[in-house]
Image 1 (cartoon, rainbow, N blue to C red):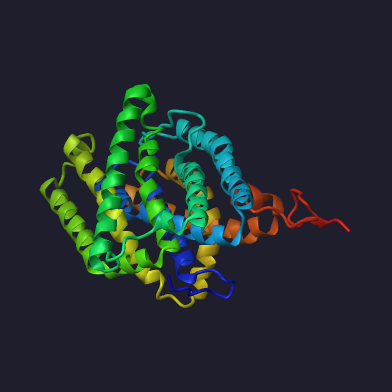
Image 2: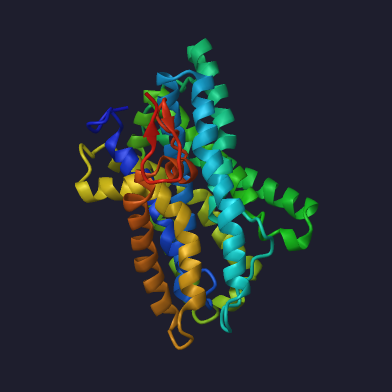
Length: 380
């Protein structure tokens, strides 16, 4: 893999894409508690087709690189803080706030929170921590034997890349289906919605493994990059199939949301497209020598923005004037919610070691006393 790094020593293109994929969650969540219209479902379905799967693959790739620089225990301890503390804040603080905002909303906001401590948009944090166990196991196997993640000879060309894409898509679909069946059989019906993301956590695991293996085996990376046309064809075919289904079902989106046919289309898009989208994103990322200043700024703030944007957007959506069209509230929610979250990161979070710990999982430098004030005092 080419090591196109930024001045900080990080891979500029991958860092940029990881931040952008997190920020792409804002349009997905901006319709929370709003009446359903076709655009909102299209945004969710497009996101399902590439965003989180590609995000997890990039996370697997970056985890593999980080484990080369740090010991497994040190890395896992850092992950526990980086992922666990913001996840706890989201579930214990933001989730009750969202429940209160939706419970006290006026007419027209039919969304209701089923559990007082849901993980909502923070579900990806437990997923990443679970995947970290896989990263440790693969790292140890790789250190003990070069053959552990061996890419078969002769599969370095486009054919090998196509096989890797199809195997990842197939295994992801199988795991997602199995997890969905288990969840439906074990959990009470009224808990299926809050814990629906368990199916996604299982289904995206092969994407994380694909990213990890690509980082450790240049032969696999070359194979994937050699299958760019195949990956593009999959993405275009998925888009065409989805557009056709939407056209045939024009005007019946609310009815179809609960239909098995629509669920099947979403399932197929969500499991077959992410590996192909990751290949295209990987090729794009490796061409980035240095991200523009504005992109670096957004990428640096993406963790905070993603964590705090949902309660802000729910507040906007549930308190918007009743005569506003859903599209207008949606647009205001994205612009105002995103801007406020960015301001909070740059003006508040980065100046407070305590908030940086709670919202970004960043541990204060050694010798720093964490306080609730903007600046921490340094022991001498």
